[in-house]
Amino acid sequence: SGTGYLVTNNVEKKEARIKEFVAKTLEQFPPSK
View (spheres, rainbow, N blue to C red):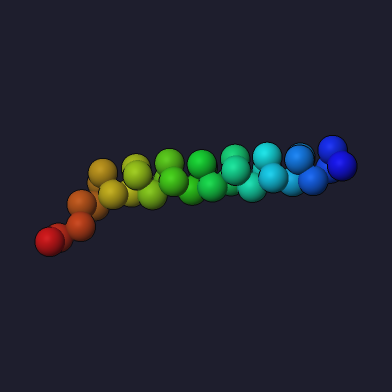
């Protein structure tokens, strides 16, 4: 089942991109605590 591996790989890439985006956003707008 190579397709399942590809799907997992894509999800991981998306999550990594989201984490990167969140990190950059937090750098610009630090949470006020």
